[in-house]
Length: 56
Image (cartoon, rainbow, N blue to C red; front, side, top):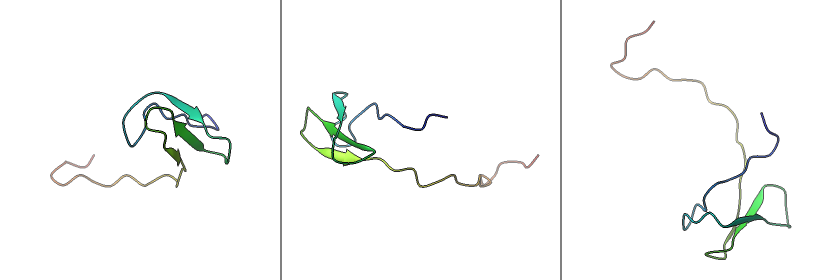
């Protein structure tokens, strides 16, 4: 697994013109809409059973 995740699209405008933002780790800037945002991994979640699905 990579230590650094890279976003493929801006969460605000959907454009792909992203660059790392220099202020902090995990921060990105969109050159299309001129917004800066950050990504953070919160952790892994446990799988939950889907209603109506048979258990194995």
